Image (tube, helix red, strand yellow):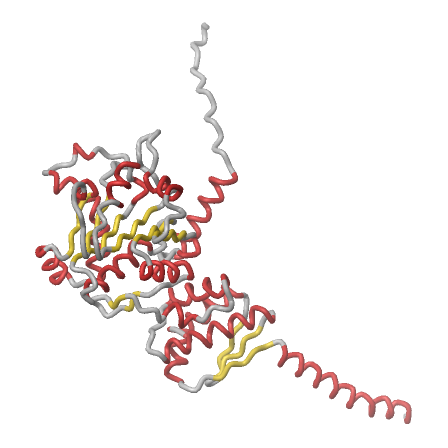
Length: 361
């Protein structure tokens, strides 16, 4: 009995030590963050904790809410990344920047690419405030570099896939320059290249024929400026939207000029556009060299310019990739899938057709 008693007597301190160790390990295997403002914490969590669910799924962590504290469980690297993400998003909220679901996605991509980045340096780089009071700002490292390049250079090329904000940010920068009287007009142009449809068969006069090609520029403009104000600016010529062909023979002074879909320019058109630049003007050229609609055998002016002007002082090239996509999250997956498909597979040749022969030979 004494032996058993001794054994039982020794079990309690041993179990106590084990429990202490488990508690210590639990503390080390989780990260606890405390927030001092419940209103901002509620915005940080998102509706029905939607922001937390996005972070958990993306970073493979678990996040528990306990009053004004968040407890993050998972691998140490993932914990640290989630902690930095939540802390910096909270700071953005305190500085008046509203956090949407998409912003959480963008922030995760940014910190995955570079964990030393301060999100405030990117999200609070206010480019323009739209008519509906929405702040337009960079949403990725390349977008931040693009905005800074436009500020510092008179000619900037933005090259990359659809949905990376190339044209949208350029238009926001142009409108901001216009509102600050840094330029006197804004010129938006596109090449009217047929992508499967014949321009000549479209109804109407020349202006009506080319209008569908310019519609994306009008859509972006009306997203930033209310309709009536945009109409007045268009009527006065403060903002001009025109096909690239209309630029021939002009010199554009004190202007902010944007050439969109530049992958569909010919070599001659690109040279013509670049030599329109006058005093006090900036030009931004955007395009996606994976979506060229020029006839077979025609060299894209954008691809050529990338080679010819690569080392020209005063000209900056900014390249975007699928991580910069700011559309629906599936767009990023689609671009990645197509790049992988085109890079790793060759479409099989179709099998030769075999005609059925009559039974009698």
